[in-house]
Length: 364
Image 1 (cartoon, rainbow, N blue to C red):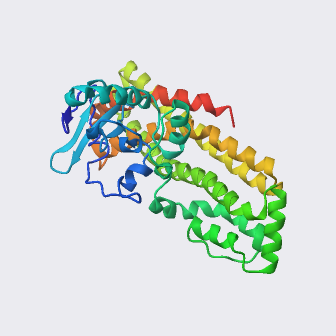
Image 2: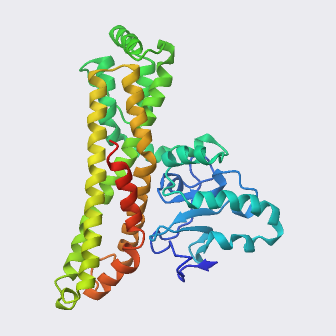
Image 3: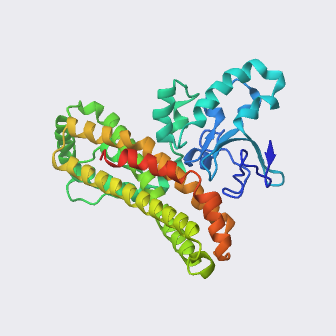
């Protein structure tokens, strides 16, 4: 086990990437909201682990896209991280339980992202149950934070029911309440018409609204992650390009090739995934021009099909950019220091992110 800061190649330190904090319980009283809302963290207590000591442990992706098990986290002691292969040695009195848990953990280490939307799909695929389905929902705080992103998706729905009348929506829950209990006769007629177009009973509209909200909340969540990452990637690329002004760097053809390869991959990844989101936006707008049950199922299927790859790409970029900001919080660093950081921390795993994006880029 490692206690940060003292990472080895196989037991990398997330503390530099995501500084340790004392995690306060979240909505469920057990997991911190930040853990639930993160791309790179999976609290093991969400799944039925049998080893008591693992219920408070977390799987974490580091900047090299390796998965480590964080068995403790404390402001003074730092973060205790273990290579999953070495986990059994920490719990010798629970050998039987560990054998079962290790089989699950091994499968979970293969996942590219631990965001709740990817996990819904991947845990079902792996046959790993969840202790409570509510664990695979964003926290209330995150849902509120995403309200501005949701307005683009909720406005057409409100207009279908209330026409051009302005209705204040501060949270997705407000939308559900508004549409589940229309306060005007015309709104009720429009809602009835909407139910007919969607081929659902009027009393089933609340269920449709919940599903609609969740589908587009996932898009809002990933879009917010992307919007935060793209400027960081651009700043990082500018920071790296400054190093290429050094004569010592420009003379080294191998270094220049390595830098060029990294820049091309980052540009290609961000351009491609941004294009995917633009395609989703067009598709969601088209839905309201020809609203019916099939068109909604089609939009839902398209977004769900991309959850795992979007999560994987965004998770990979997020942990790399977070480490860069932690290692160089004020920019700076000499040319060789910058190039060495690119070679040792950014390049490893970047090709994997690129492959994930390429595998999905042609499916939108």
